[in-house]
Length: 510
Image (cartoon, rainbow, N blue to C red; front, side, top):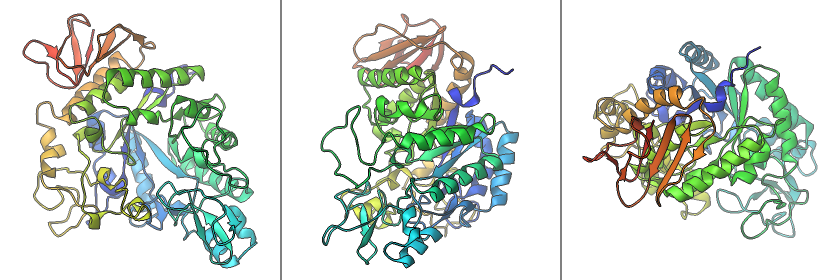
């Protein structure tokens, strides 16, 4: 019997946003073969798994999350053969691969929705989606899209369909047996292909209240009966996902959940998924006290279920970490997360300290920009293609082609200064900080006991795991480290001339 902890419990997972990672064919959009060509970057970095954002056949209204065929590869991204090769090559390098399941909605170009549109009011195909008659001349309810504007779109025949996201992403009805059967088929398809885990997109949105009642005003509280977010009924779906995952050994699921610990905790009950993102973390300011409160809350919630948190340092839906927490704060927070029990999710480009990019209005692709009528710029600033080299070729090694290539989102001036090529040799670059910390983490912290929280001055967060102490300084002054340990194992930035830790900064000591 193997008593070793499951591989995902404390893994470092690298999120590959495919369109922005690497372009292999010169069309300006990242693809699967681009990932294949850069797998060694992940090995050198020291991560244990990569998570691939959707590569499925798509209507391209929301960068791949409006899916036309959940079990086929979009030709822009590559082929099923590329997926098989990627899985083989990643596994040969000791890397696990995590897929992305979009279970809340399809594209309006999906065969089911095209049938529903053609069928007219009352057609059975419409029952696979959330479809309802309007109220007078208006929609069935006052729900608003998370991307801006109304969440209902008229068919033009007195019935409307629900889309919590873009108008081209109609929500599936999880009360319909066809939906359940088809998504389960998708989950099995990718697990059988060789994926080691799955991330469930919009996990809390899969159940909607009958009649589509109004959304309560004000802040949510435990026990609130929200009409479409984290409803009790949604856990029936995730218990079924857990059963399908359990049919194959060493596979796991992580729920995309937005909210405080009490929201995500039920998704990690023993009969549900193995992880849920601790998403409030990415909205927490760079303050030791605030970060400590948030971290302890998620650790307590996970412990009650016999789980460990999934710590997101960033992702494709939020402002870049180096802009949220600052260029020195982002690696400091990352080292705190790496020192905690649980898995850490590192978004591609954050190992380079890439900042949010302010794109011109004409370059924006995010449907949020259009649906909000220009009041919300959306997520494109965190999705600009990565710089691999200093080369002044217009794309800094992102594509194999010459200067004529136009990347799907433009790279800003000076992007080459942040390239992988430069950071491999630049002392104290974000890349070198991460590459230095991960081996230490695996040897000194991965299997360490639960944290013991230590008394600390204002602006300092400190905890000990086994023989290793993690200290985060967000105070006004550099922090002497003598009281925390005699041997420095890793740090997010250089100590000053007196051996003190500047602010913001994190150090691991023993």
